[in-house]
Amino acid sequence: MRQDQNEKGDSEFVDKLVHINRVAKVVKGGRRFGFAALVVAGDQNGRVGYGHGKAREVPEAIRKATEAAKRNMVRVPLREGRTLHHDVNGHFGAGHVVLRAAPAGTGIIAGGPMRAVFETLGVQDVVTKSIGTSNPYNMVKATFEALKAMSSPRQVAAKRGKKVSEIVGRRSTTAVKETADG
Image (cartoon, rainbow, N blue to C red; front, top):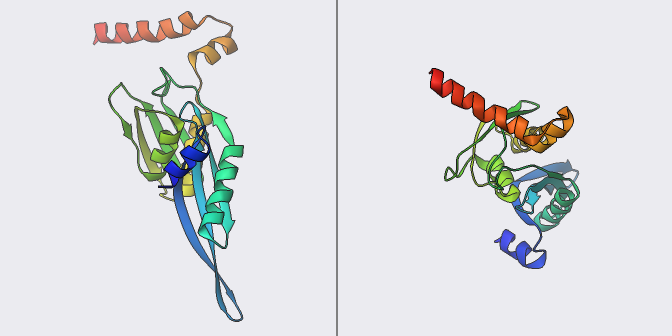
């Protein structure tokens, strides 16, 4: 519902509400309630960000979190525009995530907060596992730590001063040797 409204207004980005937390402040006359929202936003084409917003009303908290998510975008290199280039681990606090590239047709196999990140990122095939905490904030932050560590063969080749074909070529020849030996 919220995603459709946003797509019409700002077609470049898609946002997903991951978590809302109601917090209470005890004052002399009783309790004052506030809301904290965690939102993930992306362009479904390799850019994604997350944001946290707090306010007295839910819509205002979501708006603040969405703005923060759009400010904190990161670019993630994707293979064929549908999956990750390589397997990677991410760690934040007690949250530990494992992200694995997957063949076409696998789909997004991820739980809750991680699924929102990959849907807004534009990944179609990925297998993930969350180890440790199920706290949505730490899971999202650990996922982003893993995505920041992602590198494409082009980036690796530039860093090593080699051609992309040398980097990718080695990966495919070792796979062929392993299957021939095994």
